[in-house]
Image 1 (cartoon, rainbow, N blue to C red):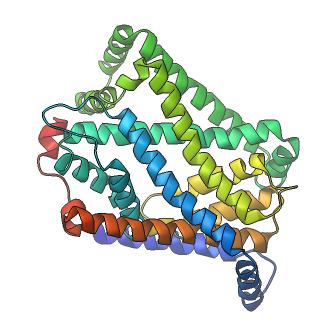
Image 2: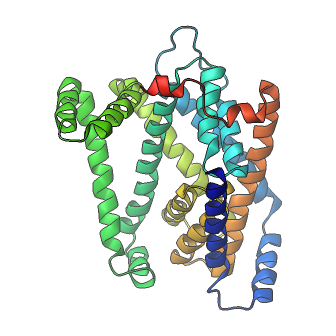
Length: 346
């Protein structure tokens, strides 16, 4: 199974790189020479700022995780979450199938004493929050910029606006469900329970387990202060990546916050495709597409995508390795399935 995952990841990476380098209108040598020229024109200060931002993002994620996790019990603690997040992203950078997510669960369980189900639930909630943010980064720029909407329809597909509207509706429904849960938690549980009765027993059972994992990580939703903190941190993480694109674009007059949000939405889509190690290929192809739609020259977009990926990759991987050594835990111990995970999940 692991071999199949690795092969599938390599296929996706190669396909992404083919799209990334293809359709540029130049020969292979011209593409590479133009790309190297654009890379060499990037200032050292821009590279340094992007490297700092890539680590700052890990700290922001760790802080959000600290607020999101439920109250500690039975000796559990929330120390070292920044290091755990960095280690997880380091593993995602070098291994396929998002094994870094499993590492986060194992580390939070082994080092911090949290139940496996709680650890898994916290990651699911985090992914939902990230999906809401990056989906808004897609449809908000389109709704605010007629020129961007026109390029999307002409260069991608005439029905692309329907996809943007659909994304906005899904985000609204997701936020609405969260508000419904906060205002009427008992009613919400009863409604979900009644819906589950119409599903097969296996699906209903898994749904109940997932629901329990999610609910254990939603205590923060009953605090206005924590809701504001988590919303702010979620958007702060995304805007840090957008700031990297603005810095790399060096076109302050034509490439601003709206364009950077749109480009980041495409980058997040490429990074969300599973199996590819380090998001290679899929992120590059998706980000190049998003940047060219904003009006960035294709060669410039390629250079931005390469730097945007390479700097966080190197910086976070190096920091993650240092933190891993400081934990004195073997690499294989955090990339394997946690012992007792079945019993935790029912």
